[in-house]
Length: 271
Ligand code: LIP
Image (cartoon, rainbow, N blue to C red; front, side, top):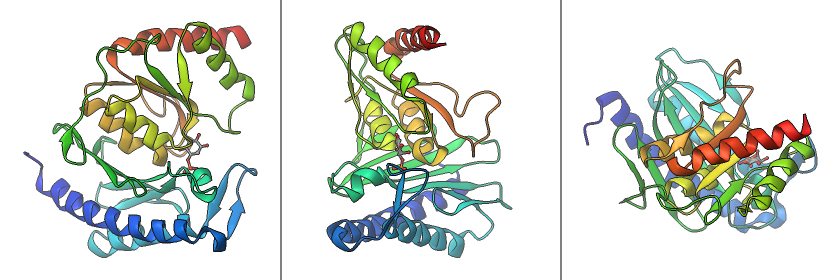
């Protein structure tokens, strides 16, 4: 691997941090009965002491080694960068699954440079132990093995991950769901956008779409899809800031165009 020194130093730290964060999160997961849970936007948008504790651990570890780096985390927001480097972290992606005792949740860490290019992404699913990693220009790996998107699937044979939240009008999601099923496709919703996009990179899903997602949910996983030979639509999209988030689409190359056309038709029907 030909990884620049500044990236390599941060990648080594990220690899150490994500393992420690995974152990902390698993401890809270095992002790869910005592988890204080707060609703954010609504009853489906929750946060727990686990989310906050994991983000605090990652933030403090980064600050101790790279005090001038920026940090954007789901729970404590944006700290501007003085070095040009910024860490984007979701301490527990799939929080709703976490608090309900479902296994599909993960920790997502991404590093971006001063040009807003994602240079590496790590995603750890502590319940399964699956560790996804991508470094810009160096490919994507799952548990050390190189991964590639599914080059064979079509919308009629593959599984499409769909994300849904109350940040988006129900009709906007159901219209795409309806169009996908009507076209002979099938969907899954895992509750963790990061893990679902990483599964596109691993060739398990042929695509993932969500009308609104946040940067901390997807930056790491989107790099994995690109490094695994997949297509990712620009995120967060024209005229949107990183803090606003936006629509996300990641797909195997042969699926990208038919899926984008299906989504556009579905959105036209409800406009
Ligand atoms: C979740 C995302 C998911 C989205 C949920 C939620 P969180 O992130 O991964 O794609 O549909 O509404 O935003 O809140 O669990 O970190």
